[in-house]
Image 1 (cartoon, rainbow, N blue to C red):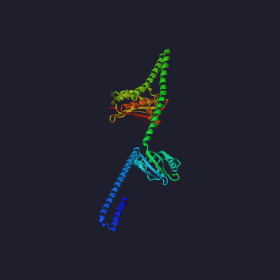
Image 2: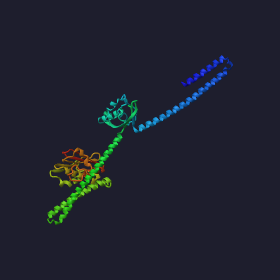
Image 3: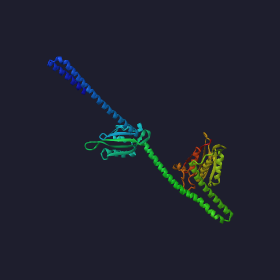
Image 4: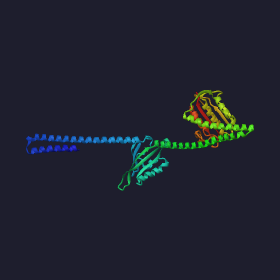
Length: 427
């Protein structure tokens, strides 16, 4: 438009000059006048083009700066996985300017949605709190908004965590909020980390509790046989009757074995976990190993309890650490004996599959509550504090089985007995 005005001005000046020249009859000077006017016009046009070029260059530089700022702006939003939104207080409608949340299409789209409807996907436990907080901001009762809440995804039967901040962006002449600006961010990763930290803290606290209980229990477990050994040994010289002396010696021997087993359990689990105990792989007959483990307990069964076998083969040659496998079997049989007052204990194994064998011990004892099925493998944990033992046997079984490349699992119902399975490679 401005260039058009300049051109119009130049044309006007030429016409005016011609008219003046005609009027004063200076026709002989007309070519010179026209030349001057053309030069003036060209100068004006050139001056305008230079000025317009400078202005265009300035505008392009400004656009370039704006573009760079937008790139940086979007980079920051994308890195932080943020979305920016506006809320028109009068209409109650949301609009999203940028949305860089990491879940993408999994998010509930609230763009253009009324404020009340936008709260529908929220977890019912969070809805009223978030609604009231946002309403307080819109009414001018608060100057800032900050909420953490869960958003439900019905078609996936799942949810995710969001954190939102907002403040008043514009007010009317009366100071009432008319526009709200806010940010929203998915914080699933942060929540997962917080949950992991809470669980780690709970595990640490539980570990401390178990260690304290273990020390108290070990004090009792060690003191009981030790007191018996010291007591019986002190009166032994005063006993002349040979039968009574033999009875006392048997009790001393029995309590010595109890004390030795407790110390062995503690030492074994410490060595295995520290990596000091190396595997010694040998080939042997599994039937013989299990039969020998059962023989250790044959005379210690509670009255009314039978100890039976159920071997899938008459002889099965296996290659693994014999001492560790024998220890596992003995601990499982011993555990079954402690909790079985009536019925039977059966020790057996299934036919090998893919180079692995499953050894199992089934009992008709008191069973284990579902909530304790995993806890019984924790060190120092005892389902029944009145049952003898340090609470290390099953933990040792799992650690040893793991060192052999295997696992220990349990199936049980309270009042219906239990079955423990040891699955290990045998070649």
